[in-house]
Amino acid sequence: MNHPTLATNKTCTGCIACVDVCPTSALSSTYDRDGHLTYNCDTDKCILCHQCEKTCPVISNYQYKTSGYFKSYAAWANDHELRMKSSSGGVFAAMASYIINHGGYVVGASNEGVCDIRHIAISTNADLSKLQSSKYTQSNATTSYQTTFRLLKDGATVLFSGTGCQVAGLLSFLRKKVYSGRLITVDLICGGVPSRLLIDKFLQNEPFDIRRILSFRTKDHGWKSVGFAYNMKVEDYSGRIHDYTGVKNLVTDGFCSEMTNRYSCYNCQFNGLSRKSDFTIGDLWGDKKYPKQHKDGLSLVVTHSEEADGFLKDIRDYLHSEPTDIAEALKHNYRLNNGFHIGGRMFERKHISWMFSHLSYANLKHVYANDIHIFSPWFLYKVIRKIRIILLNRIFHSTNR
Image 1: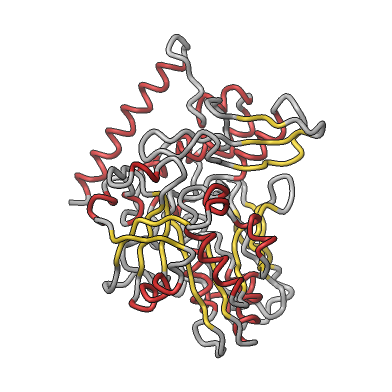
Image 2: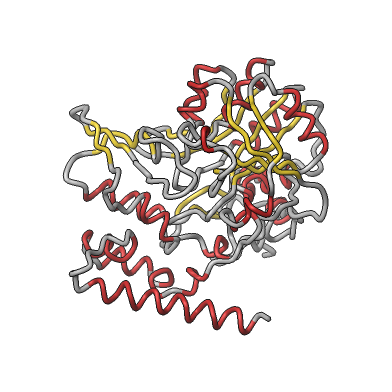
């Protein structure tokens, strides 16, 4: 039978748009052996409509990058409380607050359990904190595309936030659908989504039972444009808060290593200065122009249309923004416009499922969280890995000139 052929484990982004578009629920979300969100197909339910192939932004070759419009801004929320609850300058929170206060809806990633990150829709400021702050694992966007379409069909304004591939999944999902509402899309400067294996091992092996990951990063110690320190916080079942500032761990240090990302993240097709999203946001790393704003957090905003620039003007009571030099910003935010990373060619990535099945927790932290002391035998491994990365980069760039 002519069953659909979808993205492979090398190309799938985990956007899960294929699951939402399936009319018979033949497709469902699951995790692969490497700990990455993907799809599963029940062929007995498949009616061979191939809507999933037409919607998948990878298989359909959906063109997310454009050669058009972009402007860059330094920005921060005017509401100090919203700003301090955000990872950087509070741009998304300011936009979301404006949309909610004008009767709209916001769709974004929320932690719905110990660490169950899912896309949800909210319509009140009381729920806004659920969508704030970074989550260093991939959000399951299942049902969020259907929810967004239903709201747009009812004439609502919807602010949708996610990674570039998730926004591409939404736009591809909506491509031929008719609605009367207004859609505003915000994607992220994304360094790739790490394996869920990092979080699972962390939860299983820390010396206390974790009730909830409270935050992946906060600004309790202030935000810095250079040398920012991640400080994940968790709560155990006795109510005690554990702060991982300066403590090597599989979650945040594993994310920073980029050794467990999806294969598609090592050659991301959904980055670029010009995109079909309305906005791209992230930290304004490396900034020297606004030192007085650093402690409370500073964001980079890239607009991709004149309409997006107009929206920034509309929300000036919520968000302060000033034009900034994109060339300078790119020096410290290369993933904004560059989807390549050598990590996909590393032994540690290729054999991640075996490593997590056979190595001890301590050794996994040595490999993936860089938990290595200078006098440890593992320090030699660290040196060798650095040499391998340099050599692989040189080989790659010499063969792709």
